[in-house]
Amino acid sequence: MPDTALLIIDVQVGVVEGEPRAARLDAVLDHLNLAIAKARQRGMPVIFVQHEEADLPHGSAAWQLHPKLARQDGDLQVF
Image 1 (cartoon, rainbow, N blue to C red):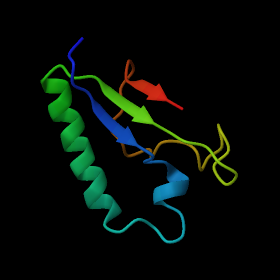
Image 2 (cartoon, rainbow, N blue to C red):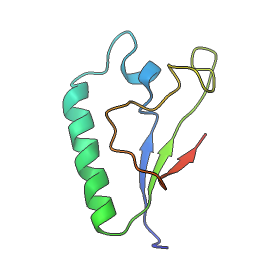
Image 3 (cartoon, rainbow, N blue to C red):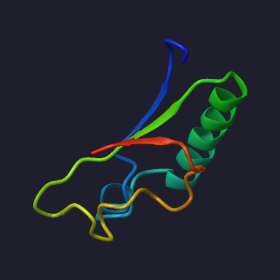
């Protein structure tokens, strides 16, 4: 396994789609997906990190990663 990975941290529905909605979210998601594609081309693991708190309970709709992220089976998740 390479010694470099791409971490995608807290791009959760309740964080980025909440009030207020994250600025330029669509562009941010496009840039993240480009970075994810480049990491995969280079053989780097892609790791998604999710946190939980009172308004983001584990497993809730708000806690989920944003559905527009280019995730694949085999990507690692840390929560």
